[in-house]
Length: 386
Image (cartoon, rainbow, N blue to C red):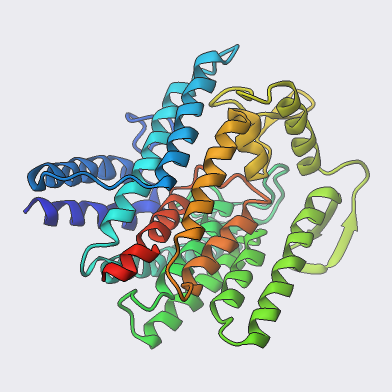
């Protein structure tokens, strides 16, 4: 009974991830969503199940890296001057993300759960795609809804972009990358036809966001299909090219209209993203051990504060280099422990999320931690035991 309850609450959590902005839950912390409340209940049911079975999750090197990441975040909050008012809530949210990793890795290893996760993500992805399309169509006729956001991240523009149930189009785009990798896995419990329908819906949705994550979505698809030496060489070449492109979009102050991508123009002065990155580097240089403090934004543009919009830099500049080292070590452990042959759908999705992380701060995205949990569930010793 406890196991069934934990499974149901966990799957409900996954289903609600794309709808958080429409159903907020601010009583937990300032950025909490309704899915967080469900996940808290899922954690309780999961822990109760472990207690009944009289067992604990086995600790592995990846957990040491994550413990360093969380512990150093707490230290950063404790010594920050001034301490950000949102810091304690941010620490609670960070703990929830790490719990999401642990519970996902344990749940995905249970019989029948990979297929249940795949079907849940597929169903909520189709509904998200429909909501995004409806929002864009309504905006084209002059009706603006919460299903769309503005064009531009640091500098908003006039064009409405799909965001579905997320608070920002870039979050929806990143979720599309994640969902495409989950539903493309062989154990996702979907027929080939349904898999193609869901991935096509996600492809249309990510295009409607007109975000940099379109590049990441393409990279995930290339790696997913890299089943021959020629395709692997293409995927490697595409990956290198897209990394260069992402770095170039930060360094060069270039702009274009998404509906007229050939009309590329260079603006005078440094790009806003370059300013946020360089000022975040200055913050890191001034506070290399504990950063600017949990809950702060390390970058600046005049009197305005910004996140770095570069995930490794944002982690280091806000929490300190040891926190970044812990997070990097955890990801390294996941890669070293992966099952062979490598799950191209899963690791192609993770590589694409890493590429997306060069243009925005993905360390707080819930679906990113679900993806890492799936990678931990697919480790080599799990496959050998099965």
